[in-house]
Image 1 (cartoon, helix red, strand yellow):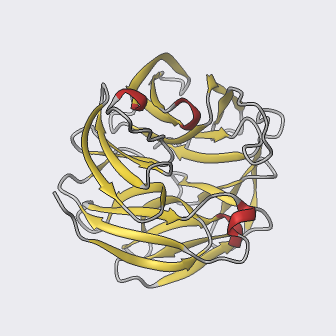
Image 2 (image 1 turned 90 degrees about the vertical axis):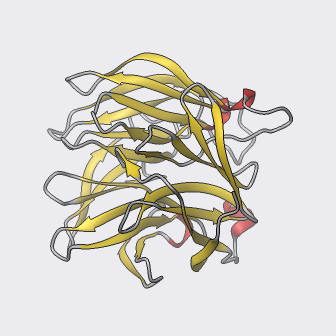
Length: 293
């Protein structure tokens, strides 16, 4: 099925971590996202009107909200989670003792537990690939390792029953799932889908992901310039091709059926220096959003 893809917003450096969020005080939906190399969190509405929400002195990545409405933002290089109340940006959690390299994406559950991934190694310096962890930050400030032995944990989702955590392993070309225990810890690791086995001579990898109401995942794949809809077990349901790397995706909009895509020619800061070719794309799909984020 051919779908109409529109450019919602352009003139970005590198957009990541898209989250559809309805502001309680304004009752208005926005797509929030981080622009890594412009060092700010921004938001855009369905009409393409955008504004800067907050500026950082570091690269921002994953975004989420606490039950009281405050926004959490991952500060990548400093290995921190920051909290923003609409006026002040403050330190929420220091993850430097737990993260071996830059922190990255994050998903926050309904109780305010934040799960934060990290690179594990320097992907731009030619370091050997090595496994790393996902860090759990509880609302009381306690920090622990939620899962380990993951190959570049990236986008993650939590199912609407709050019982299953699914994360993309970019350097494993697979999606892993865990049971979420009552105390927010993760257990029972298993492979949700092996993307390397879906189709001959096709090499997608997961970056950002989101969940729909039929339990399928939309998965942004920067290596193949497309966004894939996949069911558990690895059945490829649909592919939406774009003209540059797809680095993240999020379902949202008024009916939950707009798939927003963060697109850019590359993620390497050296290759993006002096460029502004990042975009937010929007395409209508058939099944609405579900779960978190």
